[in-house]
Image (cartoon, rainbow, N blue to C red; front, top):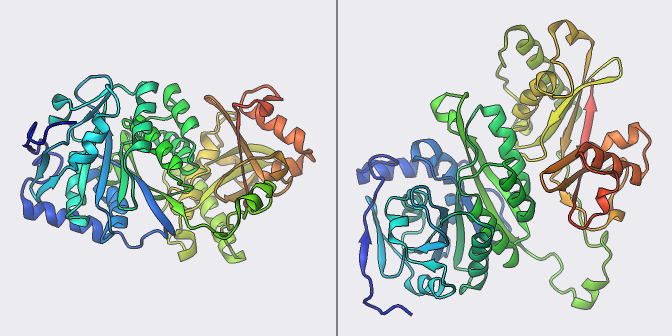
Length: 487
């Protein structure tokens, strides 16, 4: 245990005037403008356990981060455990720069929770108070203007991860699971996503990682980070926080907002991805269910499929028109038109766009995570299906009149615990193993008249895996449903 007078200091702001305004009035106005611009708060029915936030300059990522912090506004939160990566100081282990230290920003000081900081430091010899790791690190500092605004009296536990080795990621998860916990404590993982790639390439990478986060799949996320298929400068802390959140009872995650630096700079050729995510424990639907009754439930009983994206005939026609008008414009002069969509189509949705010619597949691309309004998703993936499907040469303008467009609007994906859960004609499949991933839409099995085993085998083939790989214990299988319609 550290002595009460071992260290008492103020951590001076290192990035005021660069990552955010140094003038207190200007900073307050900026933060409040970001928070007030959050038009609606996602429906979180349960106990909030963790948040994921970006950490770039507030002029770039602040609008995204505000969607997470808006959830904390006025809440009874006493402690915030801030976890982020070390950008400038190379070391092993974890740095907790908090006992008897107040973090200063232009809006005032944010106190550390000395008791919790000491508890973390005493947990393991590889958790220390590395002063050098924190003095010139921005990933936690840029969170403080929002925290000071929405939770003016909350205390922090500032944790920076050194080299994101597997043992360090596990260590952070373990100490987060061990630390004194109560409903007044929330964990925050600070990370930016892919760095300096064209927006369309970066978006695809980020979507793959967001799929894992939204399914609370920290194992696959860590594998993708190792293989390079997903980029997150704070990937290690995110994996740790996600794992600890699951152990604390989290069973839901929701994407609050996604964007990239190009949204502010206008430069789409080289962007950094940002995401705000809430991770929470939902309210139990059957609180009176006994443990014995719960054990007797089969994998199908007690499960409710996600609600489908409800689309009427007019809205389906509108989406098909958006896809076709987008292709006409893009194949003519490389531009993507703007559309004034109906309100329902402005809701976030995930979809695939499939192009066929004379009954043969000509391109199919989409995503499983709802990271943008549905009408924008359809417009963007119509172009991707036409020119970016690596299985085909790009579609030409001369082909356009002979193409047929089909749209599949997806439900959230669900982990498969028993193969008996899968229903041919209703469910699509996605199979993960290490860095391999394969996805087939629900209609594929119906079109080819496959049985369940063939559907599983063909999804494995799509992932580049042996046909029977779905039987391996280290393979993860997800299913999803889709609203499918076409021209």
